[in-house]
Length: 263
Image (cartoon, rainbow, N blue to C red):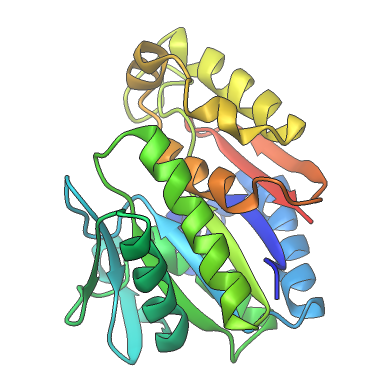
Protein backbone atom coordinates (compact mmCIF):
# COMPACT_ATOMS: atom_id res chain seq x y z
CA UNK A 1 0.00 0.00 0.00
CA UNK A 2 1.47 3.42 -0.91
CA UNK A 3 2.14 6.27 1.45
CA UNK A 4 -1.16 7.68 2.73
CA UNK A 5 -0.02 11.24 3.31
CA UNK A 6 2.92 13.44 4.23
CA UNK A 7 3.14 16.50 6.43
CA UNK A 8 5.59 19.16 7.55
CA UNK A 9 4.89 20.55 11.01
CA UNK A 10 6.68 22.68 13.62
CA UNK A 11 7.27 21.76 17.25
CA UNK A 12 6.97 24.88 19.45
CA UNK A 13 6.37 23.76 23.05
CA UNK A 14 4.16 26.80 23.69
CA UNK A 15 1.61 25.33 21.29
CA UNK A 16 0.49 23.10 24.19
CA UNK A 17 -1.82 24.84 26.66
CA UNK A 18 -0.04 23.26 29.61
CA UNK A 19 3.17 25.01 28.55
CA UNK A 20 1.92 28.07 26.69
CA UNK A 21 -0.47 29.03 29.53
CA UNK A 22 -2.32 31.35 27.17
CA UNK A 23 0.61 32.46 25.00
CA UNK A 24 -0.31 29.78 22.47
CA UNK A 25 -2.93 32.20 21.14
CA UNK A 26 -0.03 33.89 19.30
CA UNK A 27 0.13 30.93 16.95
CA UNK A 28 -3.57 30.20 16.54
CA UNK A 29 -3.20 29.62 12.80
CA UNK A 30 -0.57 26.95 13.46
CA UNK A 31 -2.85 25.25 16.00
CA UNK A 32 -5.78 25.25 13.57
CA UNK A 33 -3.60 23.80 10.80
CA UNK A 34 -2.35 21.10 13.16
CA UNK A 35 -5.94 20.18 14.00
CA UNK A 36 -6.75 19.96 10.30
CA UNK A 37 -4.01 17.44 9.61
CA UNK A 38 -4.88 15.48 12.74
CA UNK A 39 -8.44 15.11 11.45
CA UNK A 40 -7.14 14.17 8.00
CA UNK A 41 -4.87 11.46 9.43
CA UNK A 42 -7.78 10.06 11.44
CA UNK A 43 -10.08 10.16 8.42
CA UNK A 44 -7.47 8.26 6.39
CA UNK A 45 -7.33 5.50 9.02
CA UNK A 46 -3.57 5.80 9.34
CA UNK A 47 -2.07 2.81 11.17
CA UNK A 48 1.38 4.26 11.79
CA UNK A 49 3.02 7.65 11.68
CA UNK A 50 6.70 7.97 10.81
CA UNK A 51 8.10 11.08 12.49
CA UNK A 52 11.50 12.45 11.53
CA UNK A 53 12.65 14.68 14.38
CA UNK A 54 15.66 17.00 14.55
CA UNK A 55 15.74 16.51 18.32
CA UNK A 56 15.90 12.72 18.35
CA UNK A 57 19.31 11.33 19.40
CA UNK A 58 21.41 11.29 16.23
CA UNK A 59 24.73 10.10 14.86
CA UNK A 60 26.94 11.79 12.29
CA UNK A 61 27.40 8.82 9.97
CA UNK A 62 24.08 6.96 10.08
CA UNK A 63 20.34 7.27 10.57
CA UNK A 64 18.95 6.04 13.87
CA UNK A 65 15.51 4.49 14.25
CA UNK A 66 14.18 4.16 17.78
CA UNK A 67 13.39 0.55 18.64
CA UNK A 68 11.70 -1.15 21.55
CA UNK A 69 8.03 -2.01 21.81
CA UNK A 70 6.82 1.28 23.27
CA UNK A 71 8.16 4.83 23.41
CA UNK A 72 7.23 7.61 25.82
CA UNK A 73 8.55 10.99 26.84
CA UNK A 74 7.62 13.87 29.11
CA UNK A 75 7.83 17.64 29.00
CA UNK A 76 9.86 17.79 32.22
CA UNK A 77 12.45 19.99 30.50
CA UNK A 78 9.64 22.53 29.97
CA UNK A 79 8.62 22.36 33.65
CA UNK A 80 5.60 20.12 33.05
CA UNK A 81 6.84 16.62 34.04
CA UNK A 82 3.32 15.26 34.38
CA UNK A 83 2.62 15.90 30.70
CA UNK A 84 3.64 12.74 28.85
CA UNK A 85 3.19 11.42 25.33
CA UNK A 86 3.80 7.89 24.12
CA UNK A 87 2.87 5.25 21.56
CA UNK A 88 3.50 1.64 20.64
CA UNK A 89 6.23 1.31 18.05
CA UNK A 90 5.55 -0.36 14.71
CA UNK A 91 8.26 -3.00 14.89
CA UNK A 92 7.34 -4.49 11.53
CA UNK A 93 7.80 -1.20 9.72
CA UNK A 94 10.99 -0.41 11.66
CA UNK A 95 12.52 -3.70 10.51
CA UNK A 96 11.31 -3.16 6.94
CA UNK A 97 12.91 0.28 6.75
CA UNK A 98 16.20 -1.06 8.12
CA UNK A 99 16.15 -3.98 5.69
CA UNK A 100 15.44 -1.82 2.64
CA UNK A 101 18.12 0.66 3.74
CA UNK A 102 20.69 -2.12 3.97
CA UNK A 103 19.87 -3.23 0.43
CA UNK A 104 20.39 0.37 -0.74
CA UNK A 105 23.67 0.72 1.22
CA UNK A 106 22.23 3.48 3.40
CA UNK A 107 23.58 3.24 6.97
CA UNK A 108 20.77 2.72 9.48
CA UNK A 109 20.84 1.50 13.08
CA UNK A 110 17.91 0.44 15.24
CA UNK A 111 18.44 1.68 18.79
CA UNK A 112 16.79 -0.96 21.00
CA UNK A 113 17.23 1.13 24.16
CA UNK A 114 16.41 4.61 22.87
CA UNK A 115 16.22 7.78 24.90
CA UNK A 116 12.75 9.06 25.90
CA UNK A 117 10.80 10.79 23.17
CA UNK A 118 11.89 14.34 22.36
CA UNK A 119 9.62 17.34 21.97
CA UNK A 120 10.13 17.32 18.19
CA UNK A 121 8.38 13.96 18.20
CA UNK A 122 5.96 14.44 21.07
CA UNK A 123 4.27 17.61 19.85
CA UNK A 124 3.09 16.22 16.49
CA UNK A 125 2.37 12.87 18.12
CA UNK A 126 0.18 14.50 20.77
CA UNK A 127 -1.93 16.25 18.14
CA UNK A 128 -2.20 13.12 16.02
CA UNK A 129 -3.10 10.84 18.94
CA UNK A 130 -5.85 13.23 20.02
CA UNK A 131 -7.80 12.02 16.97
CA UNK A 132 -6.07 8.64 16.37
CA UNK A 133 -5.41 7.25 19.86
CA UNK A 134 -4.22 3.85 18.63
CA UNK A 135 -1.78 5.07 15.99
CA UNK A 136 1.66 3.45 16.11
CA UNK A 137 4.98 5.25 15.85
CA UNK A 138 8.31 5.06 14.06
CA UNK A 139 10.77 7.73 15.23
CA UNK A 140 13.71 8.51 12.99
CA UNK A 141 16.70 10.77 13.57
CA UNK A 142 18.52 12.32 10.65
CA UNK A 143 22.33 12.43 10.35
CA UNK A 144 25.20 14.56 9.12
CA UNK A 145 25.36 12.66 5.84
CA UNK A 146 24.74 14.55 2.60
CA UNK A 147 21.34 15.98 1.76
CA UNK A 148 21.23 13.70 -1.27
CA UNK A 149 21.64 10.71 1.05
CA UNK A 150 18.76 12.01 3.18
CA UNK A 151 16.63 12.26 0.04
CA UNK A 152 17.58 8.72 -0.98
CA UNK A 153 16.72 7.49 2.52
CA UNK A 154 13.27 8.97 2.02
CA UNK A 155 12.86 6.82 -1.07
CA UNK A 156 13.83 3.78 0.97
CA UNK A 157 11.21 4.66 3.57
CA UNK A 158 8.58 4.83 0.83
CA UNK A 159 9.62 1.40 -0.45
CA UNK A 160 9.28 -0.05 3.04
CA UNK A 161 5.87 1.59 3.46
CA UNK A 162 4.67 0.08 0.18
CA UNK A 163 5.88 -3.35 1.31
CA UNK A 164 4.15 -3.04 4.69
CA UNK A 165 0.60 -3.10 3.32
CA UNK A 166 -0.45 -0.55 5.94
CA UNK A 167 -1.75 3.01 5.90
CA UNK A 168 1.31 5.07 6.81
CA UNK A 169 1.82 8.83 7.09
CA UNK A 170 5.22 10.52 7.18
CA UNK A 171 5.72 13.65 9.27
CA UNK A 172 8.75 15.92 9.01
CA UNK A 173 9.01 17.76 12.32
CA UNK A 174 10.85 21.02 11.84
CA UNK A 175 10.88 24.67 12.72
CA UNK A 176 12.18 26.99 10.03
CA UNK A 177 14.51 29.92 10.73
CA UNK A 178 15.19 30.93 14.33
CA UNK A 179 16.42 34.39 13.27
CA UNK A 180 13.32 36.19 12.10
CA UNK A 181 12.94 38.89 14.76
CA UNK A 182 15.27 40.88 16.99
CA UNK A 183 13.42 39.53 20.01
CA UNK A 184 13.69 35.93 18.77
CA UNK A 185 15.92 33.27 20.35
CA UNK A 186 18.97 34.16 18.23
CA UNK A 187 18.20 37.69 17.11
CA UNK A 188 17.65 38.75 13.52
CA UNK A 189 19.56 37.89 10.35
CA UNK A 190 18.50 38.83 6.84
CA UNK A 191 18.95 35.20 5.83
CA UNK A 192 16.16 34.21 8.23
CA UNK A 193 13.21 35.64 6.27
CA UNK A 194 14.96 34.71 3.01
CA UNK A 195 15.22 31.06 4.05
CA UNK A 196 11.60 30.89 5.16
CA UNK A 197 10.27 32.59 2.03
CA UNK A 198 12.13 30.15 -0.19
CA UNK A 199 11.11 27.09 1.85
CA UNK A 200 7.43 28.04 1.83
CA UNK A 201 7.64 28.51 -1.95
CA UNK A 202 9.43 25.18 -2.49
CA UNK A 203 7.00 23.25 -0.31
CA UNK A 204 4.03 24.88 -1.98
CA UNK A 205 5.41 23.79 -5.36
CA UNK A 206 5.77 20.18 -4.25
CA UNK A 207 9.26 19.91 -5.79
CA UNK A 208 11.14 19.05 -2.60
CA UNK A 209 14.24 17.87 -4.45
CA UNK A 210 15.16 21.56 -4.48
CA UNK A 211 15.97 21.13 -0.78
CA UNK A 212 18.98 19.00 -1.73
CA UNK A 213 20.70 21.86 -3.57
CA UNK A 214 19.53 24.65 -1.27
CA UNK A 215 22.14 27.34 -0.51
CA UNK A 216 24.11 26.05 2.49
CA UNK A 217 25.19 29.51 3.68
CA UNK A 218 21.60 30.75 3.83
CA UNK A 219 20.60 27.63 5.76
CA UNK A 220 23.36 28.05 8.32
CA UNK A 221 22.85 31.77 8.88
CA UNK A 222 19.08 31.33 9.13
CA UNK A 223 19.60 28.73 11.88
CA UNK A 224 16.95 26.39 10.55
CA UNK A 225 15.77 23.36 12.50
CA UNK A 226 14.75 20.49 10.29
CA UNK A 227 15.87 21.05 6.71
CA UNK A 228 17.06 17.45 6.68
CA UNK A 229 13.71 16.24 8.04
CA UNK A 230 11.99 17.87 5.08
CA UNK A 231 14.57 16.44 2.69
CA UNK A 232 13.83 12.90 3.88
CA UNK A 233 10.12 13.57 3.40
CA UNK A 234 10.88 14.86 -0.09
CA UNK A 235 12.42 11.54 -1.05
CA UNK A 236 9.50 9.67 0.50
CA UNK A 237 6.94 11.42 -1.73
CA UNK A 238 8.96 11.57 -4.95
CA UNK A 239 6.93 10.47 -7.95
CA UNK A 240 3.67 10.32 -6.00
CA UNK A 241 0.52 12.08 -7.13
CA UNK A 242 0.15 14.21 -4.01
CA UNK A 243 -1.14 17.78 -3.93
CA UNK A 244 0.87 20.18 -1.75
CA UNK A 245 -0.78 22.87 0.33
CA UNK A 246 0.79 25.23 2.84
CA UNK A 247 -1.91 25.45 5.50
CA UNK A 248 -0.22 28.04 7.68
CA UNK A 249 2.96 30.01 8.22
CA UNK A 250 3.68 32.17 11.27
CA UNK A 251 6.76 33.97 12.59
CA UNK A 252 5.51 36.02 15.53
CA UNK A 253 7.82 34.37 18.08
CA UNK A 254 10.93 35.01 15.99
CA UNK A 255 10.87 31.40 14.73
CA UNK A 256 9.25 30.21 11.51
CA UNK A 257 6.38 27.75 11.91
CA UNK A 258 4.99 26.17 8.76
CA UNK A 259 2.32 23.47 8.40
CA UNK A 260 2.23 21.89 4.96
CA UNK A 261 0.35 18.85 3.74
CA UNK A 262 0.81 16.58 0.74
CA UNK A 263 -2.32 14.52 0.13
